[in-house]
Image (cartoon, rainbow over all chains, first blue to last red; front, side, top):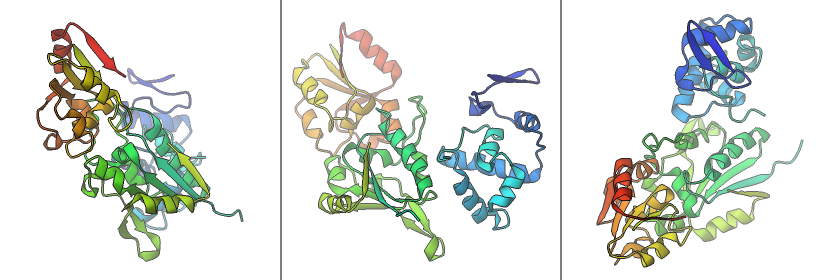
Length: 110
Length: 135
Length: 98
């Protein structure tokens, strides 16, 4: 499977995650979000960028409970809770934000 | 409430030559979702998994050694490394990654996860577990 | 003959056997987990002691395993993939001790 956008081809897996992390850019993130009827604002980007940094450091996408805890530590309790994160990413914060961030499916999502 | 079991993942293989180390690590991370009391042991060539300075770019492989640093976030805070296995291989604790965790009960103080212990002591800890997985 | 060893000396007898079979004009190249034998200070160093063959280790595999150049046993040469090709071309036969 693949996404065609602005003359560029982005290979994806069967669930729509990018096959090659290095192909990722903001355009494809916005495109994937719009397919889910979601418009990415600053608060979404804060989480997506956090996940991308986490992946850069640890080479894994964290499970949602790890993400929640880590966001809470970095950005405060009002953001480090499931209610806030699910309001941004209703399909599941870790899965959906990882997808838009070009990362693989989170490790430890059961 | 279900009872919490003591679980130990025993890592015996070198990191890159086979898939055991990476797959074992993924099982540990996924398994933490069940909120059991998890620890890991590194014995034999398993001690090579957490060696410092692994750089797989030239070999064209995925470097998953940074993922061991995430174990603390997943509440895996006890990594037992067998002293005899280090010595046989000419290694010391300084050759290993300084893996740490943040202690929630102690104002998030950063503490070392790696504990180098002798085989006899490790075998006692092993005997006290409810479930063991060997990779 | 060029011999390659890809198993850790602590998990397999490949290196011990290879060294005992290798002739003095042969070369032994450590690759993959075989490069753990290139680290000094370990018990496997004894296997290499007294070996008359030329000993090499593949740099990308050393690097992947965190083995820096200052930790290598004496008398061992480090080669890259190009050096591997040269060794294979120089020797008429290659034996892989799997």
